[in-house]
Image (cartoon, rainbow, N blue to C red):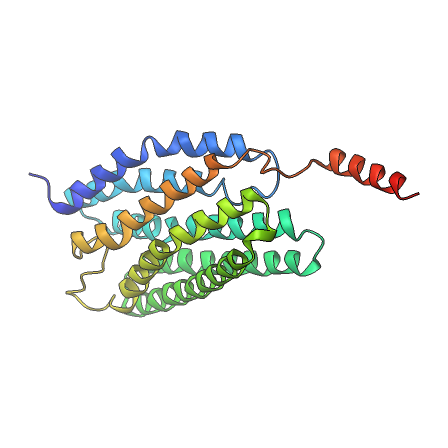
Length: 267
């Protein structure tokens, strides 16, 4: 008989099999114009979750350090694309409505640098844990915790920016309003997922921690990690298909033609 974690592994496979081609289709549909950051991260995320299911099942049936580390890395780093997609939503609003503002580009560069730093910390934390010594486990915990804190701060900043833009939604393109609505609806579930990650790391040394995604409480893992992630993915996919592929933004040639016509009319 399957145990709860094996059941969750099977659920990941079943739920993400249709998500992978849908995410690819969304990227092909909306990725013709920049920024593509809101769409492509859903592809690696869904692939990681699809791969995570068999890894969890294999670990439950034949536990090993290698499978444990692989599962932890997939679960911890796997949530990164959702944060990147949220940054992509903010970049859509900035580039489509404030492209002439140089601060918009600076904000995007800073946030992307923070993402790279956090990814490196989470990946390093998972890799160091494979050594298995007490000092290595302590280092792994520190690296992973700092990585999640960076992501938590980034998420708070991104949600604050989306809330700020939402108060000015009347001045934004209709597609940007739709993007903001999707991002804000998904944000509570991203917060829950981030809280689960922080609790997982903070209570890592506790043998009875319910927040260990591999050996902890399967219900907590399902309700605070897997379910919120799935809701966010569905929300982002629905939002992506709810806007025109060109987001209602004039192409460069069309914008130039409109500018030339306007200049002639002013002569």
